[in-house]
Length: 289
Image (cartoon, rainbow, N blue to C red; front, side, top):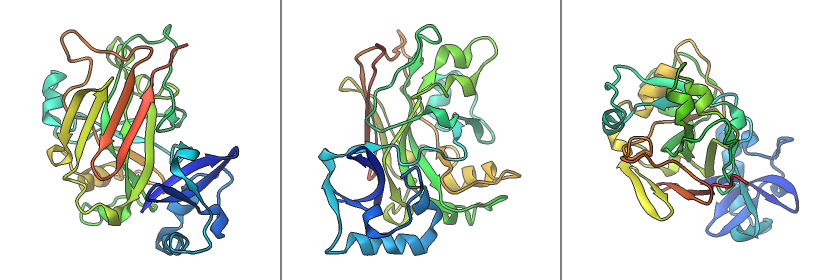
């Protein structure tokens, strides 16, 4: 299933996609959080997913055309965003950094979340070197700590697309502020939906791609991840409780802007598209005015 958060008539609602139609889950009698996003569905486990499937097959369902609603970020307030750096060998090489012996984790603050089709913006007094990074995102479905690699995929709710937008002049200069450089407002566009884990046969064989103004900048496959999803979840959960809705961007491949000659940074008017096979595409325009 493709689960999404959408807005119609100024009201945010959880939904499920059926072709080019959005089925309104709030109208199907399912519990809805006060935020209206998908957190209630993520927390609800298999039983609530069963109710979603019933709503999807109902003849009495309320639905909207996809192009008539605003698609929002799937979750507005996950407890944390645990991102992985340097998780493709070719990206390590272009960054002139050694291949890590264990997952490199950092956080993106939840204020950075924005919608899959929303504009990206930042104060130019703070950063002038903003980069793109396409990533497969993993959404955690149940609470867990010290999770084993063998059981890790049982904790996955689904998969999504993330652009790990990064201010390189903050990330690399002076104090090496990775978290700050990746956490400015609008620096985590994601979605456009969460594809439940049962609909992704192999998350380690998905093409990931970035287009900038129609030009291909990044293309790779998740089979090239240095640390796979079970390894990431097991490592991130050592001594740390992962919660339903936690978002884990799994790393970006070769082709980022700062490593190019000359460097390519996002500028006003650019359109950045990030895509993951079998999931979808997010498209964000840069609007600095």
